[in-house]
Every structure is written in C-alpha cells, then in structure tokens.
Image 1 (tube, rainbow, N blue to C red):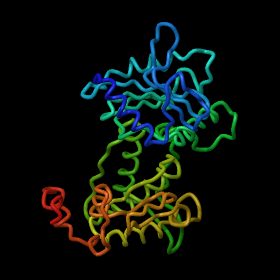
Image 2: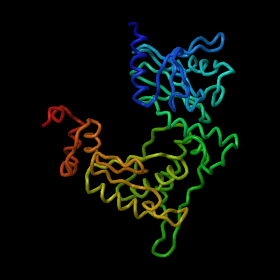
Image 3: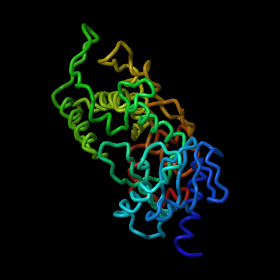
Length: 323
C-alpha cells in the first residue's frame, strides 16, 4: 500500500466518523445520504481527478485533496482550488467553483471556506458533518434571494464585518449599565481583530477592571450578531464557575429587555454530559481535561485548587499514571 493509499484509508475513516457516505465512482449514489463522498472522481479535461468529490443533498459542494502523511499542506490550496473549478457542467452543484476545499493527510487537515469574503486555508481537527455544510449553504440561497434574508445572514467572518455599533450605556435607575473605557476598548479591538480574519486574540485586563462583564458583553455580541454557535468559558475552580453562571444569568441585554439566561441557554457543566442546545458552556479546566481524556470526573474532584490544576498542565505525567 502506497503512502497516498494509507492516507486515504485514514481519510475514509474520518469521513465516516463525521457522518459521510463514502463510495467509489462505480457505486456512487448522490442521494444515498445527506453527505456523499465519492473517491477518484473524474473532472473536466485538463483538471484530472478529485481525490474526493463531496455531495450534500444531491449537489456537489466541495473537494478533498489527499496527500501522504508528512506532506506539507500549505501551498496545496492552489491545486485543490483548481479541482473545485473542474466539475462538469452537467452535474448539479451548489455553486461553481465549489465553495468548500480540504487538503488532508489523514493526520493533518486544512480547510478553506469559499463563502467567506476573503477565503483562506486554516487547520481543522477533522471533516465537518454534512448537516453543518447544509446550514452554511443556505447563505448562498439568502444571497440569491430564494429564502427570506436574515439580518445576520452569512459566515462568521462576513457577520463580524457588519457588526452593529457597540452600546456602551443602557438601562435606567438601579438597572443602569455603563462600560468603562478599558472595557469598550477591549470589545471593539477584539471584534476588529476577528473581522480582520485573525481568529486568535488575547485581552489583558487588570484585577477589578470587570473582565467577566467584558467577556459576557462580547460573547453576547458574538452569538447574537456574529452567529457563534457555542462558546466555551473555562475557569480554574468550581466556585468561579458558579459565580460566572450567575453573572451570565443576570446580564441584561443592551438590545432588548431580556437577560442573557432568558435569551440563550448557559450551562454550568457539572458532568460529562453536554447540553447541545446550550450557547455558552462554563467548565473547569480539570473537567475539560478529563472529558478530553475520556474519563469521568467526580463532582468533588472538580473543586481542586488552582495550584494542582496548574501542576497538571506543567507536568501531566503523574496524572497519566493515575496519581
């Protein structure tokens, strides 16, 4: 088996795990499932073969370029992009060129979302489920006017570039709220960074400067206007998780009369069971670590001190041995 064939075995497994129906051209049935991945699909003359052509709801939506393990994926986007343009005109497609492009070794995977205003490749953990792509593809219908347009229709990057102006004072009387200058600066600069297609950001604020309130403020805007599906809020102790949950529930929206907890579900994770309808999940680092390791964590263990948690991440070996 060649290195490329080994990579395709791994890619097949990743696709199946993500809910795709994987088949060869000879056995292809684009209506066999919501998502169908067809191996070695012949494209127009001069475009060669797509390692995988992806169909969602009976229409082509993307391609996957398979590379051997260890191959550098950066720079392969141009080749994958050519494949996305080579679909025969007789075949149904959501858009030409196809909007979704992946490069994968089965170990490392890059993804480019052509629906973004400035598409770029980024590393992802695995392939997305077909149902998620269906949701994204509705943005094309909104743009074409075939369904009722939503105020915040578009990808996350598109929405971040059309965010409404930040409200800095709202409410009245005892329920009056006002952002401090440092909080205003933090939220505005974070949103500018995300709109500039910089997904990683760090906000540094002094003790007592209202970090939690600032966080809740921009999280609310990311969900309401940016289309963020779910936000993970990590804390280092259980008592901070409870306190944070109360602050989320008490936060009054500047844009309507609802509290955060009335408008969106906020879950304080106290077991390994995630509420899939929750828009914010508050979790201790210790519990998240145990979930990523596939272990159960007793509630009392979730109350461990900051010192032990920091030790865990500095030297995980004793915990790997079960100490």
